[in-house]
Image (tube, rainbow, N blue to C red; front, side, top):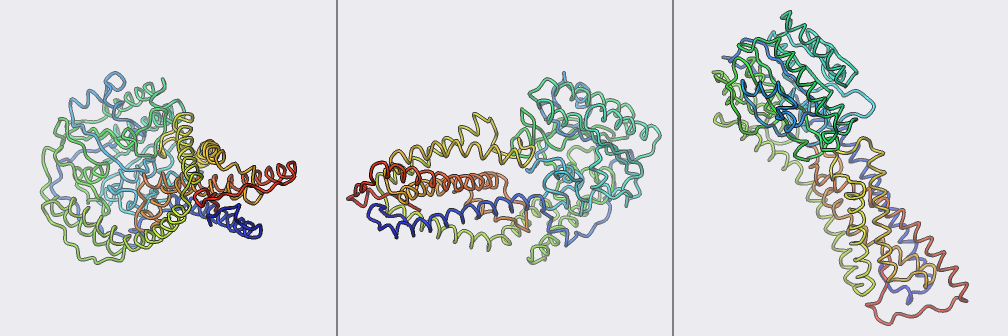
Length: 574
């Protein structure tokens, strides 16, 4: 629909105007529906294994420990804070006695999915928990096997003291002892620890989960790691860990300290920043071989706990037991791990409608099974990616062909306007608002929409100014003036919308097979929000510009607009 508005009869101009308005409204509707469904899909995502549970296996024979195991999760604790001897001297002392390594996790790096990873040994796309922190409600119950259920089936006494979210994530029969609190600060943690110490002193537990939330609370509400309250909260958590360690006999008991995620400097998490998706892991006690160790993954925690305690490996676990940290490797671990990984891959294949004849090798079953499951997922998603990619290619080629036919001075101005839009948006977003390109800063949907919309309006002001100064729509007939604005808007949408196209092709809108890749999803989702603002604002600016052109024409006695002699001077409309 690109054409020379001055060579166009009035009736044809009005017809093109109607088509342009319809097209922009359809784009706005598409952006709204796609963005909404992507966000809803993240919150409603369910593991494909929920309908195809993985069979549970046999306990690991020949366990390296007959003592108790205490898992202390310091919510939000960063690696650099955990290794700061002045802030956390107890952890420094325990590192000298025990084993330490850095863990790596995946986005979305929120608490609910992180807790499920630690408990099941599986990433958020498979572990049966929630992929996002719920807004305004409690988390749903885990749908997959976990280390706490495995310990109960092995006759061990499991207990928990911590945040009230745990109450809804696991059934009440999971715990022989439990204490839940709605508090999230250091004072609430003190009560949490008092229950832990009491149960340990009275020898009422074999596996104890202690959930400390004061550091994470400070990260969100008191300035994050860059603030002055952060080291105070971390030091308090360190003192509370000391209380727990003092209640243990580390000649036979095991203490495990870990976090679920980190925080960006100003506070917040959820994205893929290195400081957010790396966590400290400390193990100290009877079966632990002291020393520093190479990096591992968050999914390795649950199978390591199972190996130490001699329970079955959680059926959905994708992790590798960290036996290099143990003084003795259980004799039955290799056979148990091979069988568990094989059943996991077969159940996953059935859930995705693929052949389920996989046989796990005994030499490295975890690596082989990960490769097999990645191949299964890719094969299941390939048909959708093909047809979405073909559709995107047709649309982009058609748009490029229309642009090529209308190449000229004004089209170049519109392209420069689109580049000015991108520059204005990103300068406003990253420098004025100082926001990272991830989920980590977002405290709510309203904040995300408001920030992206404001930056989009700034970018659009830059882009339309550059484009329309060249087109001078106020000197034209009203319909042609509106079409000039639509042309500039269309080029902005085409260039700024490319991340949305890539995300839709690669991830789809809401895949039943796996979670979307978060980098492409972030940029695609924000591009859709930008598209919604650009289309609606473009319609408004077009109406204003048509009105200005009509008023200007009446004041000048409606002189005939100058003709554009060359096709290369045509003004692109939509």
